[in-house]
Length: 304
Image 1 (cartoon, rainbow, N blue to C red):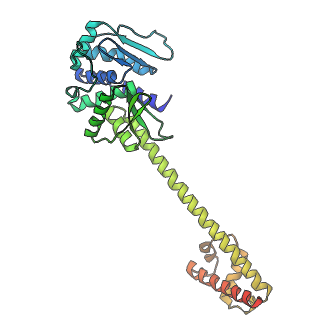
Image 2 (cartoon, rainbow, N blue to C red):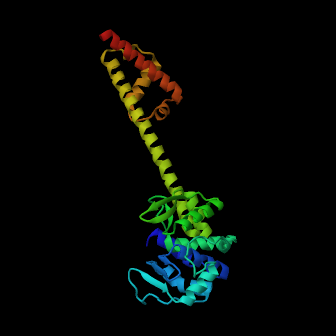
Image 3 (cartoon, helix red, strand yellow):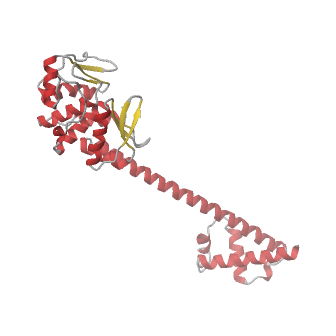
């Protein structure tokens, strides 16, 4: 099951307690469903939870049933339809539309004055025309409708709720979308899907942690490569000092350092410093190795 379907399952479990909220949710469904006109309402969905919720929602909101219900064992898409004139008139009256006039679909703000009703309205819109991508892949939530005016007013409504949606026209549909994880979390929580919102949040934390680990590993690898290259250069220089008999002329501390480096070529500076008795500091060891390399350069100069 997709992340979007799981989020909608969670939304479909929200109880229908108050008629005002049921009406607001049904209103959101109608503005984002397949057909909403003075002559027909048609809602099509592939989501089983939403299909099970619709008859209860419309009964609670309007006290009516659908004229057409999907078959008991429907496949692909469930279709709900209302064509009865009296039912359509009643729904239009409740939502503040005049069925006798040409229907310009817009948001009747009187239906979403209360915070709970706004959340319900957004829930209905998302159930009918929304989707959210698995946050493991990327952050993207969108709600699409064929009604330009309703989409524009929805964007204004969301901005009044301190959200920051973007909009685009895609294949004849007006799409409002979010690409920032925190905005997706806030919206899912607001409309009744806190578990899905928490999943987005947890995924974001895990991604950030993985990125931090990868950055550290890359940094550690780069540092290790540098240490290996430095150790290799030190050993090559010490071998040259041995070859030309310079080692015997070095101070005891430098001879000891050269011997330790040849004996432990794999150790880092800090680890090699601990091999001395008594241990010396990393800074002290680094100073001695630099002196050895200076002798190597002097040797190279005499060999030119």
